[in-house]
Image 1 (cartoon, rainbow, N blue to C red):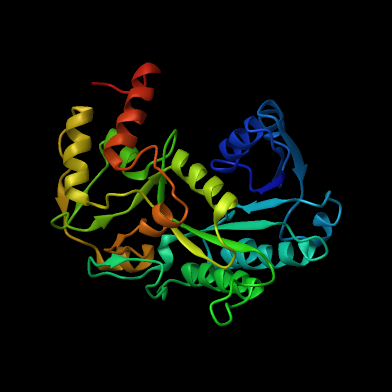
Image 2: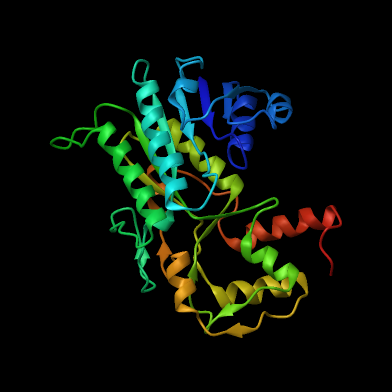
Length: 305
């Protein structure tokens, strides 16, 4: 397969590496040339364009079998999100129209779910976020689903072969907000620590993308999250014990921060990912994933006991 990875960075680079090792011809698209050597070393052919600038896409080679859009916004404002995700996806759709791929995968976010009652959330649940940035993600999803076409009388969607992966909080090498906070002594437990956290290891994001490229039906949405949502206090109790650090102090919940950061309290289900795509997790829960990360950092001498 000829594979184009748009946004060949934290997720895209290991994804391209895995696909190249499997014998695929992989092209990695980035805005700059800073990572060109890393891409080439991984067997990925570097390409340079900006999906927010349609003219730059016209210069690229075409005829890709699989296209993955896992690009990240350059900023955190609604305008940044709209430019990168919505406008960028619309530009990709237009560019690929003459030679559509066999599969197009877009990495969205479980942040589109605004449920705050601790309930189990599946792909069938409403995606009605309160923040403007998450609303842009929903608009982008709707753009792609419209391009895929709605099923008619139980038949599969027709048109552009888009698949959406709603990804939970990613952790892994060099990444993991709560992990970094705890190691710096800056972590805090919010209120009683009962809020549910949803996460996924970077390597399982890669694995889920590959599984979706291979077998996901067009027009479908899948949650990419591990198999064990965890309450914040329980997570910190386990992690603090593993790192031989004190448990973070509890602080009152700040409602203004909760609203600004779209902090939610939900348990996102990965049942569809496991049953439809038959995906088997490398790290099915946070304990498995962070045990591996702690071991890696110990080997590098980066974790103090």
